[in-house]
Image (cartoon, rainbow, N blue to C red; front, side):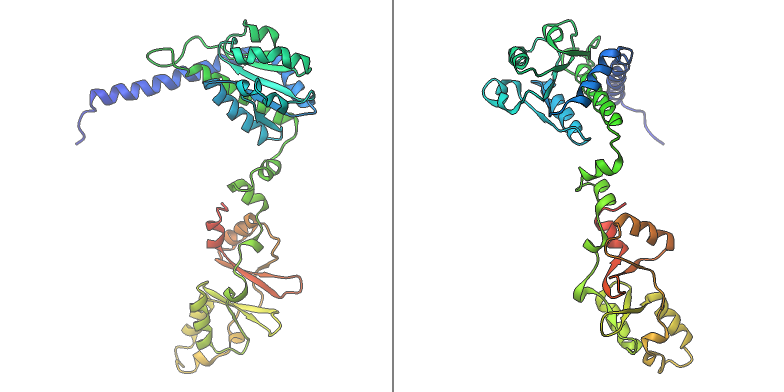
Length: 333
């Protein structure tokens, strides 16, 4: 029997839900304001031959940093420019072919206002995402997008909550609209994220993951099963390759092959361990070249329900052995 939920717990749950609902409503209220100005700003970013500088200060600066990272990771070279530092030398990071994206809740941020005449002199256009469209920055910007909210979520109504969420969402909308027209696809995204799971899925090859050299389990075709068992036990891959002296693959011998051979040899327990590997091996195993994508290898191994695959060079010489655990450890999903 469960007890009653304490009143304090109820209050906390209600507060959390209220904040999320208020911030969600703030985002939804922006949608009708997506108009021709938004479309023109997207066009300016697409046509821009240079880089995108993104600026803001305080909480707006944190949003600007995130949006800069989003643009950079989706095909638009971008960087964060601190407006205060820009007034003390970092303005040199900008060139006349660049464009500036500015975030400000009030639209009256002093450091950004101080930059405006300098940007105009350098002929650098400004896209502004503001909490107050009718503001000084709003009037001076080339394109002004409104992230205005009716109130801040929370009991005090003063901490930046709904306003920063609105700016973040509008910045994301701008970045994704640009991405869509760049025909920026998943392989492009993966190429900019080689260390992530998506990058591994699209670029990691099994040659970088396979067991090679002395870690490859190998026996000759005449190796007796008693020695095959020792090799398989030492290498711990649940199988062994059967190779010619020059490394040419003749077949494989798995745990399953070994169990079946021992089962069939029960009537002659003394002689079965003297049977050569070639007598019980699988002569036509699945093989893959080292250049195979790890994601493709995983799909194949799952569909065939196998745990290991031999990696071979073009002339069918053994390059290594790939175990499914190697793929999972590498984060290939």
